Image (tube, rainbow, N blue to C red; front, side, top):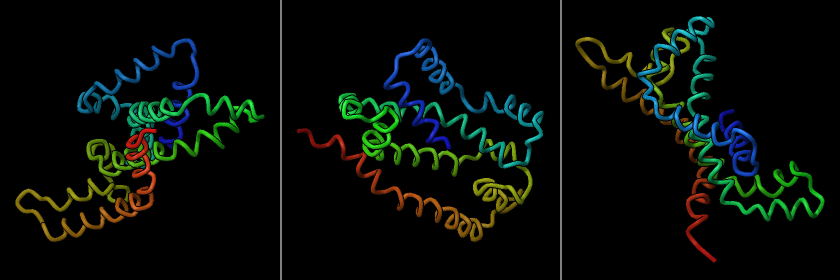
Length: 194
């Protein structure tokens, strides 16, 4: 969901000029400057007032809100790298803007989407602070918070912690195997000129 929002916003920032564009970009940039520890208490109060404590919905909302600005800038840079002439040529050939986006621009941004999706997934999968503050029930606990349960006041169960750590890596490895082709394509897209 974050990648879809970020791709839509990145496309809009890259291709359209509208009133308040610079202000929106500046506000998104400013949100990235605040340390998470400074805003955890207000977020906790908002989530508690909405009755979303111990709910994965609260984590989805928080992760989406915090990952959209960076993902939008990432996607905007990929859209800026695609010449507008390709889109205009498709529209001259009879495509609507949406068809040109779907048939011409979208296939060219797959490496960018893969990189953005990888960033968003990694940020959400390995995040500890919000998960620790907003979730306290065992049945909705995330992997990073679950790994902390192996640490007690006087001992650490290293064997079970390492086994759980390996299990936590399996979904990440499968995910990156799935998007590896797009990541490699994105890394090498600017390597050869001409």
